[in-house]
Structures are given as structure tokens and as C-alpha cells.
Image (cartoon, rainbow, N blue to C red; front, top):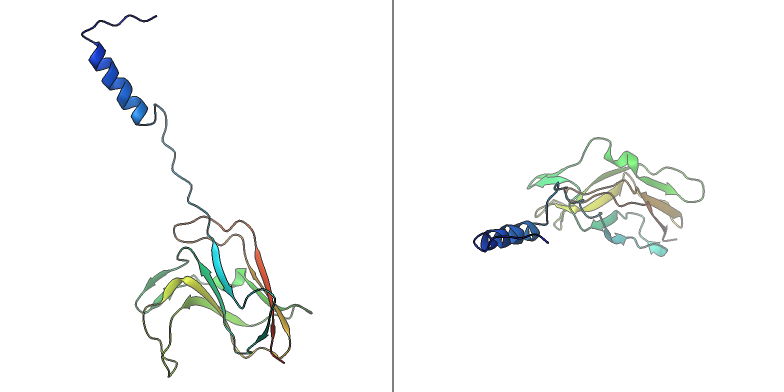
Length: 160
């Protein structure tokens, strides 16, 4: 048993309290950010009767891009990590990727862009009565989050 002089006891108790309150002695390690989560995907997996002028929308719990009032800063080649194909023959759909921004009745941008909503916009109308497959890579991460962890795959069918 360690003997401590009565005059040192308050000092020892204060030091002990500080060390235990601060998490003890040791190195501080940075917290790992939580993984990115997909909150909603449109069209939903298995949905049928989807219009041929659809844009795929993926809503996440974190911003994917830096944004300002004019738009989002989408990295060059960003869309190359995604798959947007016809399910039957893997015919590639030509599309662009960006963040969501409301439009007015004339199709003009209105309001602030939303960098937590990713848009995959086909360059032209999709084929009627065709199944399309979309894959979002598990390596996708947000500004404040780590990677999704696994690929997200979804299928929808356009209207006849």
C-alpha cells in the first residue's frame, strides 16, 4: 500500500481526477467519420412505368460536393465510377452526374443547389419498356463521411 502524506492528499486527488476525466493517459486518435448513407433513391428499385425522361436521384445524409449559389463542384470524371446500363444487354446509357437544383416552370434553375442529392441525367430519353440498372459504387464518400462500404444496385423499368 502506498502511503501519502495528508498534506499531499488533495493534490493527488485533483491529479487523479483530471487524468481520469480526460480519458486517461495515452495518444489521441482521430475519430473515424461515420459512413455515408443512402436515404432515398428514385426511381425505386423494381419500380415500373417510369417516364423515359427520368433523372435518377440519390439522396444522401451528407453533401457529396462543394457547392455555392451557382452550382456544385463535381470532380472531373466523377460519373465514370457509376454504372447506368440496360439490364438485358448492358448497353451503356450516356449520362452526366451533378447535384440537384430546382427549376422553375421554364426549366431555369431556381434556388440553391443541394449537394446531398446526386442526379444522374441521361443525355437523351430512355427506351420505352426497358429495364435499366444503376450502380452506385461503395467507394463513394461524402464531404464529412467515409465510404458507403458496398455497392448499391437498383433496377427500374420504363413505361411501355
